[in-house]
Length: 329
Image 1: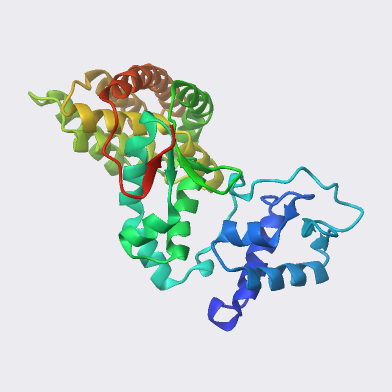
Image 2: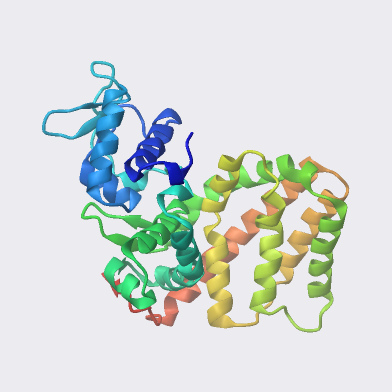
């Protein structure tokens, strides 16, 4: 494949669409409207139009009279119900942006995510692309880069009118994510265990030991670090990146726990720490099945805590929200 510098922008878009069609992220029969594709990719319409025309010449998509393009060859693709492209988890490379764009979205992503998640248990909010861009003085492309990445983590959604929506983060959503997480994360940990070296595991377990031995409960920032050790760092060695991403998208309980620490401050986390220690004990012994079982026990207990904490958070009233968030109801 030619480098981005040697290609026109429409060729880059064509390659991105072709890759997602070949990998099944854009299923056969999906309707591709020029405006919708441009909106999903955060680009202008002219290069999208040219890219779709090139794909049609290659037989990868075909024209549907008055309806844009359809993924697949004519006569072999059943036209499906129109899909919300923002609901599809596409694999998009950095070539759609550029070095400056990447630096820009990386510079604001953490703050945007924190502000959005801070309001999500308190209702439903609309995210204004224009206000977000004005607030950080960045382009529309950078704004959409940030929002698309948040969407990829299932932290926000997009409604039929193409408005970005945050929240509400309720018990039902928490339960649904837990059901998926409990099925995926223990097995993912067992699979990733051979990639973990003893020094790393010892350092992680030592952080837990020190927190348990301390005369005062750990600070929220220390809790976040301990949670990240087990639920993020231990899984980074997974060769199956789809599995890693799928697990990360189900870890909504971590958001609730983080917000609980933000609003309540220092609080007792002894049960969580003991559960983490048990997982690390099994990992240290090379017992993958034992570690998976210990993690499953921890996730069940942590889900119950997160549910209770969500009820507490709902009593705090309206949060202080960023200027690019507007309460819907």
